[in-house]
Amino acid sequence: MSWKLTMNDITEYKAAFTLFDKDKTGKISIEDCKSLIRSLGQIFSDQKLNEILQIYMKKQYVELYEFLDLMAKNRILNRDKNYLLAAFKYFDKDNSGKINFE
Image (cartoon, rainbow, N blue to C red; front, side, top):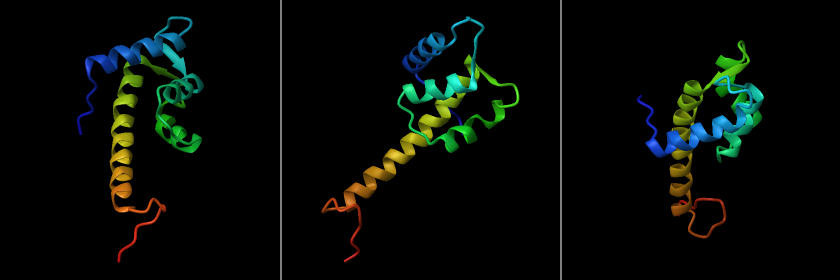
């Protein structure tokens, strides 16, 4: 699957990444990356974030291009989750958190 970001997304994510890249190396730590992802509205548990960032754990940092790739992939995950929630809410007529099959 192809992950795509708009130019506005890329600009926003680069600017945010730069704020966390204090020493201007083009790299941020895993912990900073977790904070950055959350600051951009991506809501994941610590366990899910660790799964997402597992491939970078060995080197202990994430580069800008890797971060952009992560954000593109995770936007897809969150978008799909939002679609599911919207569909659930459509069928949850009485806002009880349950779907009645009657």
